[in-house]
Image (cartoon, rainbow, N blue to C red; front, top):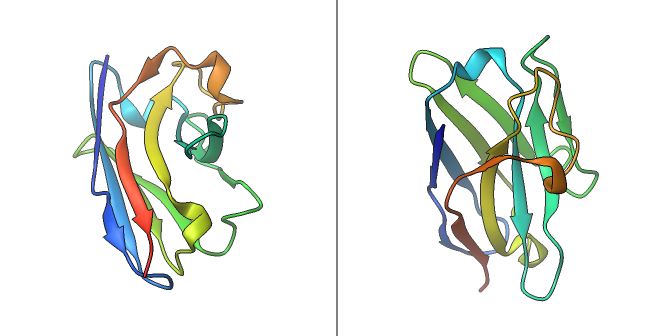
Length: 123
């Protein structure tokens, strides 16, 4: 199982970015997978996830209405569309899975992590 996140960068407040996570070694559409982030000095937290059993999506309250998670099973790629970015969204973003069908519950249970991508929101 391999995961590789990309798409981070420096963006002004109110701007947008799209993160990608290319996967291999498992069937993306069958398993739950999520995005997590870790800001300096803070614990890693869940941002969003998509279930492998029913395709349902879930978001942290802090990003609801601004971020959208999606996947392209044919391309084996997970996405995170981030709009109306705020300075508090600044963090390293990771994709991860524990190869369960439901949405990932939290960062501590994840077995497979991609290398993170830095998102910096600053003017």
